[in-house]
Image (tube, rainbow over all chains, first blue to last red; front, top):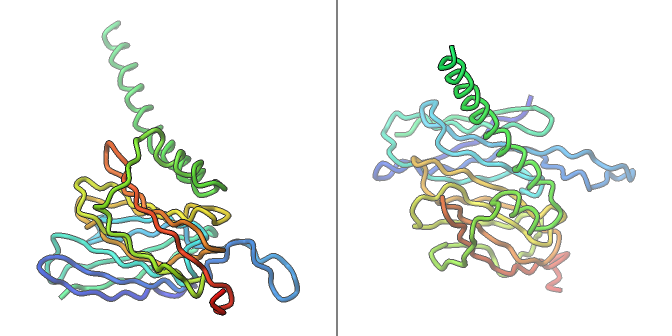
Length: 103
Length: 148
């Protein structure tokens, strides 16, 4: 079970300023372990952000996004009580998400 | 009979068209991420859209990155009608790092962190319906943190 997305944010003048951190190894597939074996590629390739189940932003990642990807974004027309959700899927089909209720 | 047939043909064509479009886009994105040269990746993403340098992109990356594994990148812009923001590290084995699709409810202002194998030009590309705006900066990666 992949670790949850850590998500923080604040609401200012109807704009949600959100910061998210997705714990993930983001292996490129070119690194070797101490025994000299190639470590298979394992990285998040799709991130989707929702406001109250409506998609507002999405991202396609390559393996060259840093380990434990950090992603900050802003969403317009938000109100207190709105739920911002960030989900990801990696190249092995694993998935995880995190939620934030704006106040 | 004939009219029905025509209608049927028309609707099938329309269906086929809408079904094919997202698939094609998906294939292009996949190809773009696999590309080993920045030009090929950009061609796959943007096709023949004209590109133009733009001072309206606020592109923040460090001039010198002490640690190539974690290079902070921020892109924001006031350009109207932004559809996506793309980050490309020219000298990486797969230059395309990340591409963000911006809906009308999101603001074109994103930050993330990327890996860099060595010193390289880093580019931010802002896509609008009829043009791609570009900002770029050289980023020097100091290996081992010795100031090399």
